[in-house]
Amino acid sequence: MAETALGHADRTASRPPGLRGIAADWSSDQRAFKNVSWGKAMMWIFLLSDTFIFGCFLLSYMTARMSTTVPWPNPSEVFALHLFGRDIPLILIAIMTFVLISSSGTMAMAVNFGYRHDRRKTAVLMLLTAALGATFVSMQAFEWTKLITEGVRPWGNPWGAVQFGSSFFMITGFHGTHVTIGVIFLLITARKVWRGDYETGKRGYFTGRRGQYENVEIMGLYWHFVDLVWVFIFAFFYLW
Amino acid sequence: MAEATANGLGQHALHAGHAHEAQATGIAHAEVHQEHPIKLYLVVWAWLFVLSTCSYLVDYFGFHGYLRWSLILIFMILKAGLIVAVFMHMAWERLALAYAIILPPILVLVFVTMMVFEADYTVFTRLAFFGAGP
Image (cartoon, rainbow over all chains, first blue to last red; front, side):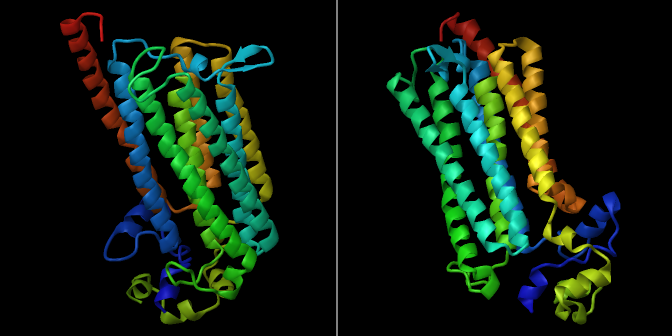
């Protein structure tokens, strides 16, 4: 009973739309998010809190970069790779961006096939997403190795403002951690889909609740968020 | 249970089959489950590639100053909007959820403004008391 009440509650038809709908949904002692399950609402609220974490990282980076009197190292040159006999600016970062966007695309399609109960395609697309995520993390590890061998440290670097290293390692490190955690949970969810847990109503190992294909969408929300954060890091840290 | 009555629905609605309930209330099944055509995702995917290429080209061609910053911001906002609206399905959610999630991060801009003043003050004191050095 409780599970049904907390699950899919698609009772939106009789409710007012627009701004009046916000007031109606939030007012009085009732659930505010009418047609999303608790799982999806909680994932959104977690992502909101994570937005503030990354927001504060980017803010501290902005403050450090604006307040230093030493010139900031030029990311275009720092992250250039020597390929085909010349330096191509930011090429590795661009490839990483495309890899992460592609993983977002495969994830969105996995969610779609999940709701169609196409277990095979869902699991394969999720594994593909995980593989692209792992590729991203490997390329980031390569980037870190390259910069560390060139002498970048959290307390200094050969090119300019000392805060460059600490900002870089903190921001990309936290983002990489998020990607890694995402890859692990993608593999777990893909295994559940493959095994048919959401068809048989097998109880989860952690919560003891029966999963639904919506779990794939919630997993997707997290994964798209990781991509979203990278959009901002790419713009503010690498391109600015 | 309390929620069910607060929503003005009898208990029978909760026991009714999902499809039946959706039909009875006149909502398409897709709206609840966020099922959209694959083509939409592919189009958005392609646009994200195009926008990423554009923002990379901003650096490749070495644009400077306000042109560079405005282009970076435009491409960033377009990409973020596409991801949130389509991939994360926010465009189809009720406004109560969309406003609860999307409005608070915009308030970070207030924090940004405060830190811009703070950073300006810091760099002023550094230049005034330590000269051009660090």
